[in-house]
Length: 426
Image 1 (cartoon, rainbow, N blue to C red):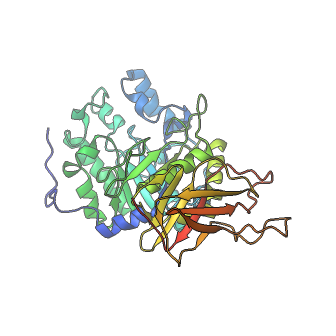
Image 2 (cartoon, rainbow, N blue to C red; image 1 turned 30 degrees about the vertical axis):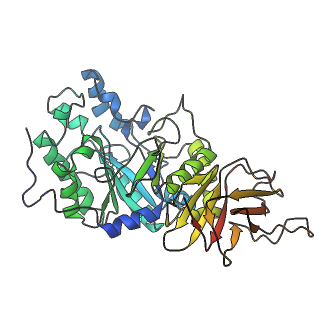
Image 3 (cartoon, one colour; image 1 turned 90 degrees about the vertical axis):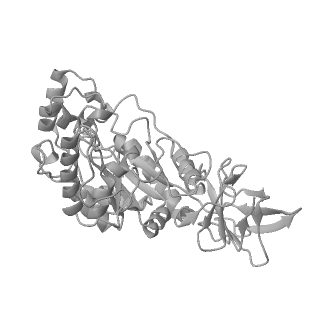
């Protein structure tokens, strides 16, 4: 059955406001959180229900909530770490495809309130992240395997089981979206997953914008590539979402994590191409972050503490990179950031890079972010200042990495040059 739009809603009316999209593009870095009742199993989130036996479905729906008790969950700890690591927004899975609600819902008993934990997890996350001045976003899946199974369907992700085809599910989704968008105050961002992304005009997006007109809808309204970065910049706002390992939800065994450097490189490339990076964590069933994920967030925190200005409020340059040096620019200033992604620049080592696509003038200054360029520890006679010159029409920058980041004086992550009164030319 095809579902008509709600009364008074047309596909042409609500949309992302241009000024809100500009705000979104300035943020640069978001934290994705995939967490649900089946984190206890360490399985793929929700999808194990597709093609499952009746016995499996019964145990998933009725038994798993009885043992979900994340007694170590502390939203304040999560939010404080996110702030330190440089995240400017969070997107939390309020409901994934399984239908289990991580919020207090009047529409179903298949939610976190009907577990031994018995607390509104979404409410606690909203409060904690707002306290850290981090914009709040909700992930919501219009698919609902538990709802469809209770309606007598064998869950198979056929499009005919999607809300734009099945009116009872659409009505159910709208009831839940009304709860999420009226019970938790202003919501900055919404990620509408599933088949709805190709059917926003006949789906939930207009309904949600009517409830919160200033909200930015990402998936469902803009490009949101998953586990990949586009090959070239896009001429519109976009967001790339990535896991740290191979799975969105917590995977206790057989997992392989990206290195901290790899995550930083993904962030740099995404920003150089004009997008936002939405980096995922998958909390353990007890409510703590896996140590491997916390370690990478803290490595990111150190890099962002030094270099964050090349990530926030920037736009793509005329070219994204020159060799292993990637570029971003301040959107309203003639400031270029050259992010050196090549071999590690050792502490105390003086090296040069040459850039053929950076135009400078007599007012140009070049600084290595994080350091004064005036002191090299224990070497009072050293001159570690950053210098530049034009040679054969190319910009040559010479610098010493003079800031000790680790005790062993080795730091594998990119360094960033700030070049004022400059622009990148094709």
